[in-house]
Amino acid sequence: QVHLTSSGGGSVQPGGSLRLSCAVSAFTDSMSAMGWFRQGLGSAREAVAVIGFGGRTSYAESVKGRFTISKDDGDENLYLQMNNLKPEDTGMYYCADGCYYSDYDVASCLRLGDFATWGQGTQVTVSS
Image (cartoon, rainbow, N blue to C red; front, side, top):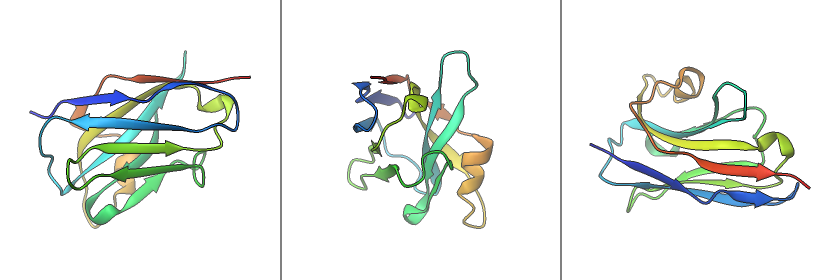
């Protein structure tokens, strides 16, 4: 069974950057997607970004152009580079694995959030 361990969160000022990492304990199915989600205090969980087979990606509108999701094909770790951070990006960030999709529609994983395995969160706080 795959275990996911998130790290890299912290406190930054608006406009700053952070890089989140998600360590994967075992090989994942390359045909499934991995992703990042976040949850602010008192808010519902929301999708941030997903990555599927062949490096296909999909992003939430609120982070497009600022965040980049990537996956290391060697160790299969997952990353989220976050630039130009805003206070509304504050929240607990979770990585997830095991979303299956069809017809190259990796964006369905972003919409539905149907992932089999979730890691513990890492806190990101953006404030001045």
